[in-house]
Every structure is written in C-alpha cells, then in structure tokens.
Length: 467
Image (cartoon, rainbow, N blue to C red; front, side, top):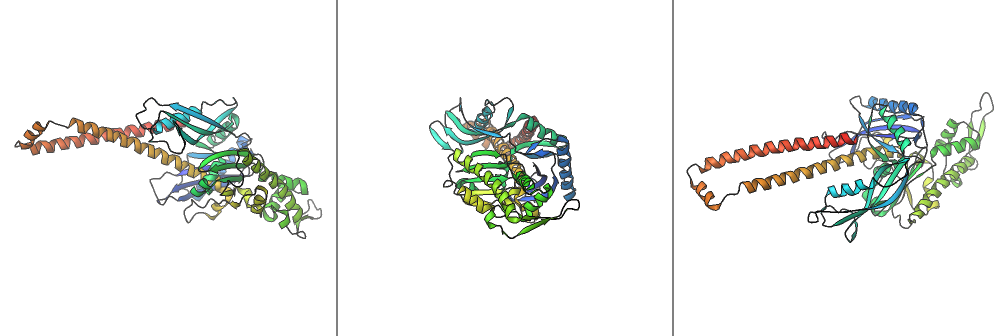
C-alpha cells in the first residue's frame, strides 16, 4: 500500500442510509478500502436534512461502525455528497483578457476564469456549489479542452454551474460539523457516482448516469468528455415503497421487503399465478398479494422516473443515437429485476448497471460492489482528484522556483574569459574552485529548504482559508 497517499473519507447522507467509507490508493492506482460503516437514515427526506438531531445520530452511528471495522482509523475530514429537489444547474460563459500576452496561459489564468463565475447572479436564497468548465476558447480557437501552455490574448470558457438552497446546504454543514467532522468539499451526488462507475471510454462515447436513490433520482449526462447536463428528479425508491404501501394496504416495512425480494420493474415478466402471503395484523387472517399487481405498481412509478430522464435528454438535444455509451443505472433502486429492459424500452438507448468495482483494489468488502455505494466510492475518488491536482500545482511551482534560481546563479557566476584563464592557471585555482562549489551547494540547499517551507505554509494557509 502507498503510505504517502492520504486516507480519504466519503460520507453519503441519503434518504434511506448514511454510509461512511475510508480509502487510500495503492501503488497501482486502485482504491484500498480501509474502513466501512453504515446506518439507517431517519432525518433525511428526498435528499434534504429535515431533522438535524436524527441525522447527527445516524452519522455518528455510521462512523462508529466504520471505526469498528478498523480501530486504527482517525477521521477528521470528509467529502460529502449533496442532492435534493433544491439542486439546480445553469450554463454560463466567461472571458478574461490577459495583460501579459507574451507569457503562456497558466493555471493562474484558468483559476481566475473559474473564480469569476462565482460572481454569477443567482437567486438570493441559492448558493453556488460547483463551477465546472466545459470547453475553453482562446482568441478565435474553440473547443479546447486544455488551454494551459498556449498563447493568446483572450481566454474564455463555457461553464456548467450547480446551485443549491442555502438553508439546505447549512443543514448538511451543521449535521456534519456537530458530528465532530469537517467538510472538505460538497460534491453533487450524480458526479460522484459517475466517477465510480464510468471509465474514460464512457466519457468520450456519451452516457447518461441515472442514480436511483431512496429519495431522488440523480441524472448526469456526459458527451465527448464534457459534462453536458445535471438534474435531480424528485422521485426515488421511497416513492415506489409508498406506492406499494398505499396500493396494496400493507405496512411500509412489508412494502419495502416485497419490493426488494419479489419486485419486478416490468410487469410482463411477473407470473400471473404467483402470490405473496403477508401475515395479518392483530389476529387478522393473512393477506395474499399478487406478484403481478406488485409489478404493475413498480413499473408505473419507474416509467414515470424514466420519462423524466427522456425529457431532460430532449431538453439538451441528446437523443438516444448520440448516447453511444447508453444509460448507466446505479444506486440502490437500480437493482430491481428487469429494470434494464424497461429502461431500454422507454428511452430507446442501451442500458446497463453501473457497479463501483472498477476502481476498487482486490480484497475489498463484497458489499461495496453494490450500486448503492457508488456515490460514497465516488466521493473518495473526487478527494483523490483534488489531492493529485494540488500536488501537481505544488510541483510546478517548485520547478519554476528552481529554474529561476539556477538562472540567476548561472548569471552571477559568469566571469570574463581573461579572468577565468588567469584563475585556472594560478597555483591555487583548484582550491578556490572547490571552495566556491561548496559555498554554492550550501547556499542552494539553504535556499531550497526555505522555499519548500514557504510553499508548504502557503498551501496550508489556503486549505485553512477554504475550511
């Protein structure tokens, strides 16, 4: 295991469960799971925290279970997924004009471009969660994916901005902080799920991630490596359970159990002569439930969710012919029998189940390969992406500082040819050169040590400011 890599913790605060997973990348780039804990969620509905006390209890229970799986863990910071009805998205365009046109475009220019988008005018009750660049424009050149290193006067980009309700975000922050944790970053759940179940080919081919959770169904559409659209559909597994409960006149726990064990997303696949026997309440006679009727209820709600998916795809001009990678179903609700067939019939695109095992190292807990943990695994991958980007920026700054220093040193050590000839031919020239070499090495080492300390302090201050 790569001991230099940090331990990243993902916290998925869902409607039906709260999961905490700790992981670290090994030397092969795969995720080693170091701890896993979950708890039943009672204070969250439709992805939003409605009861802070109950949510805190559930988070603490998930953490205790995570510690129980690995007592050596120490969890202080977490990456948290966010979803809910309040999540919205919009498209914007931003540009900057560079003063130093002779210098190449740097990460600093891109950061300024992104930071400017946080000034976008949105409703007063909303807050910007994330700003995601799509395509860059340098002067007259368009559709650029990586402008750093290019030359240009004007740099612009198209952005996908994700916003959420301020109070809903505050409730998540309070719940996590009162549980004794700090939020490293809030990540939109479908983007986290996408990171866990997609590969590079999926990004290029064009796919739609449909994450069917307990309270909501989250949608993220990618095409040619670009995030084209995100949306939160206000229906999920809980709605199906409530439909069964009300339609068949059973308890909610019974409805959930029937959905998981005997549910079909396609009614035509259910046997018409199959029945489920439910124990009667308070001495009443047992009730027999038709599996066919159960399937009809499930199919009606799932068809409604998939109709929303089709609607959003049409809104952005993405028909099924453009989605060469098809639709990837993930989340707890994706485990319904024959959901793939219903999805293909409704959308006209190919479909498959997205399992979060592609990025996991061997020897992981088998339960974590279930689609319901895709968001949590994706949160850890998001954390590692941030870590690697920060390390790359640090290394680039370090190289620039070294290059500048050596250039100055070389200039200062340049002597006239005649003086150099006299020194080389004098009796003590070798001793003088050895002494100067030692002095330069000592000076260089002292300088690099100071710069390393300053760079580390600079990034520490930036991280503290973010937190």
